[in-house]
Length: 414
Image 1: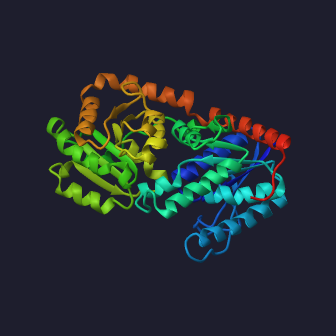
Image 2 (image 1 turned 60 degrees about the vertical axis):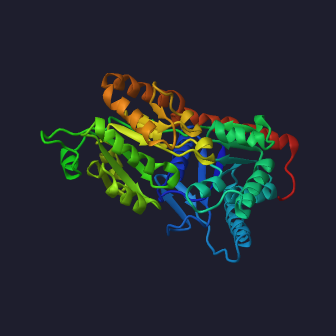
Image 3 (image 1 turned 120 degrees about the vertical axis):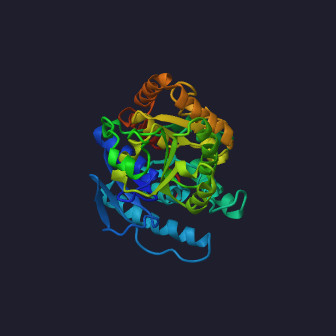
């Protein structure tokens, strides 16, 4: 039985898109008969025991504190993480180390892989230097940006196999000089066993949020459920509502979540001529999110154009399709890999409130087209993004990495 140790930035019981993808991968691998464990670095900040079970999965933790100026601090962090990984490897003897971005995880795993003679698979979910720019924590081209990129390129060069979540990331790595045959795409997916019949809208919740008309009927609701970062383009969506309500005066916008841009978005909405149509809910517990999905007709994803949004596919549109909801998304590279315009959803020009309003208006007006679009979206997820099928790609990657390392031999510690 093949054993894989997953090297992670953070994990359950913390909730994020990162931890949900990890959960889906490990659960699907268990169903295929693999033995799996995870280990997290210092950036898993939720207190807990040294070995913690969450949702039937076991995660080991790294303890300690990395101090010093930027650069040296991260190198010390890698060292502490590598020591923790090495201890689990010594005790459990995995066949493969599967490290997931960021590159700090990859470099820590690489040290242990070479020391112990174990093949390393490195998975990139996003280029974290671009994510840092996208969420306002970094600057493109800065020293930190370049160092992060160089470290990741080093890990990719020395890993036995590389996985990306989409074609955009794969193409970028090939442009850097990575052999195409070394890279496998395992796309973002959905565990369809978690998505049964969607719950019906709750009239009491709809009334509480002011989404009912005078006759007690639910108004057309456009939703965004997620994190409020600048690259998500939520300011574009709020601006689009001013235009949309001219033609669909009953339409409402439901904003669920929070993040760095929340205060600015609330101010923008309050000053908008469509202020009466916009509802902010704030963050809600993960187990309550479905209640808000149930109130929506359309989920909007108005991401702005950037390296991050052109290269990386998000998870939310797939979850939206799996729940039988309509997707209306900006025409950036990450969305084009997931949404076929006019078939599984609607795409519009990014950074353009008028284009966003036009796409939303088209979906609200042409109601007869919506059932076919919903079904096409569900079918797309079943055929190409169901973890029950996609997880099998990892077995192929692992076997290739094992074969490659056996033929070539593993070098000295990196």
